[in-house]
Image 1 (cartoon, protein in one colour):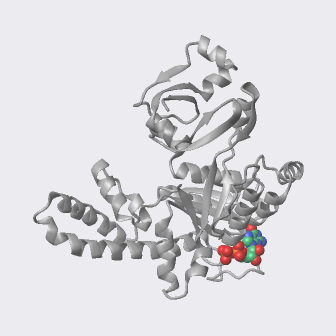
Image 2 (cartoon, helix red, strand yellow):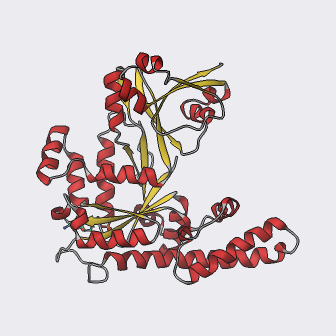
Image 3 (cartoon, helix red, strand yellow):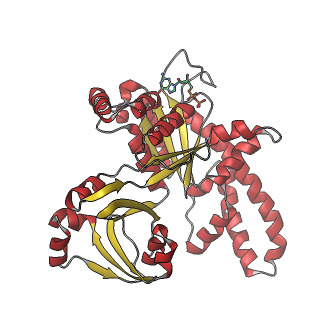
Length: 364
Ligand code: GDP
C-alpha cells in the first residue's frame, strides 16, 4: 500500500509526531495482528460518512480504512551502519510515495534548534536543497546514459527531452513537481523516481497556543505561503499535544479538544491531508456483517476496486450496484434511493467515485 514518509531536520518534532501516530494506531478497534515494522505507523482514516451509513444501514461492525506513515528518521538511525547517513536518508525517501515534511514552528528556549533560530521556511529550504541536489546528480547520470541511445531510439530521445526539461529547473533550486508535464512525459517522469517529484505536505509543528487558529500563527503563515508558491500543501499541528490526545479515551479526548478550542485532533487533519496528497479516495461496502471503508487510487475502475476486497471479485466481476453517499444521505434508505432511480448498475469500465457505496456482483 502507499505510504507517506515523515522527514525533517533534527529536533523539529518528528518523533513526537510519529509517536502520536503510533499511539493513535494502537487505539484502533481493528488493530491488525502485527506491527511488522516499528518504522511504520498505521492509523484509521477518519470519515464521518461511516457513522451516517451505519445509522441508515446498520451493520454488526464498522471498519474504517487505514493509512500508513513511515518514520524515515527511524529507518535512517537503524540502517546507518555502512553507508553514509546522507545517502541512506535519500534512499529511504525514494521508497515512499509522498513526503510529510515537518518543520519547527514553536518557540522554546529549552529546545535547541539546529541553526539557533526558528525559521521554518529556511528549514524547508535546507532539506529541499538536499533533495534537489540528489535529483540533479541522478538526472545528469541518466543524461550521460541515454544521450547515445537517443540517436537510434525514439523512446530514449523522449526520455532525454524530459531530462533536459528537468535539469535547468533543478539547477535553479526548483523541484520536479513544479514542472508541467503532458501525459507521455508524466509516464517518463514516474520512471525516474526523482525525490522532488513526490507530492509533499509541509507540517508546521506549532505551539499549543496556536492550535485553535494556526492561520493566525506567523510561522504557519510563512509555511503556508511557501507551500502555495510551490505546488504543495501545508497544515499546522501541535505535535506534543497530539501525542497526549492520542492517548486519551473518547470522553477525555472530547474534553481536551473543547478546552483547546478545536473540533478534531490535528492528527485527523494530517491523515486526511496525506490521504488526499496521494490521490486516495474511499468507497464503502455497507450493511450485514460489516460496513467497511476501502481505499482506492483515484481513477480506479470497478473490477480493480472489487479486487481490492478480494482477487476473486476482480476475476469474476460481472457488475457493480452503486449508490453515492450523497444520495443515501439525502434519501435515507437503500429502498428510497432505488425508488428515486439513483441505484446504478455499472460495468467494467466504470471509474469509481469517492463516496460510492457498492455491491459487487461476481462469478465464483
Ligand atoms: P525530532 O528530532 O525531529 O524527532 O524531534 P523530537 O520529536 O524528538 O522533538 C525534539 C524536542 O522538541 C523534544 O524535546 C520534544 O519534546 C520537543 N517538542 C516536540 N514538539 C514540540 C512542541 O510542539 N512544542 C514544544 N514546546 N516542544 C516540542
